[in-house]
Amino acid sequence: MEELIKYGKKMVAQGLAHSHFGNVSKRIGDRILISTTGSMLDELEGQIVEVSLSGPSSLDMVASTELLVHKEIYRETSALSILHGHSEFAVVLSLLYPAGTELRAEDSESTYLLHEIPIIQGGVGSKELGQNAAAGLRDHKAVLIKGHGVFARGSTVDEAFVVLSSVEHSCKVKYFADLWNKKG
Image 1 (cartoon, rainbow, N blue to C red):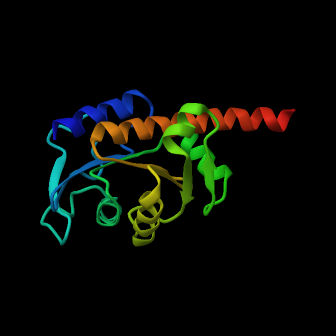
Image 2 (tube, one colour; image 1 turned 135 degrees about the horizontal axis):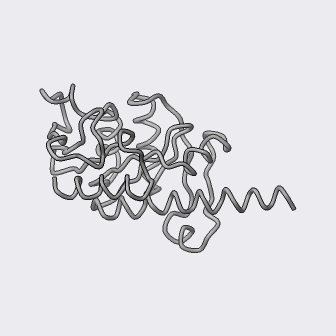
Image 3 (spheres, helix red, strand yellow; image 1 turned 90 degrees about the vertical axis):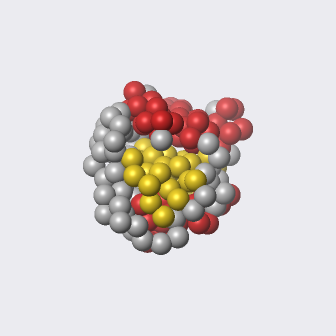
């Protein structure tokens, strides 16, 4: 739980999510630790609940509105941690490129770590978003959701944070490179 609290604060401090937008989770066997709906990521003390991965739990109603998406990703991928943020450049690029395409990293570090980032769609917390995110995250470390942000996965919370940070860096570099290329 302490890890999720630590990285929730880091997400806000680094502009990867605004305080009330985004969520964090960690899989422990057939259970999930996940932030509650409406909780502030930089004040998660007492705002993380434990729910079942396989069925309904009494705390599902207070868990993040993206719980269904987290569950689907955990069921369909090797993820042990998921961070969901709404960083500015990731959201902007998700709006500039069509769903169903993959964003290709421009800089060497992002190319090495991320390769491509699928752009998917689906409503907040919807079954469609869960299925699309899980499908994209089977072979990728992150997905961009059209107009919505990023889901990043990792085998640890730290790894998911590195991926989330790298996506924003890659999107920022790509935004300015595309702007320059259109100018020239």
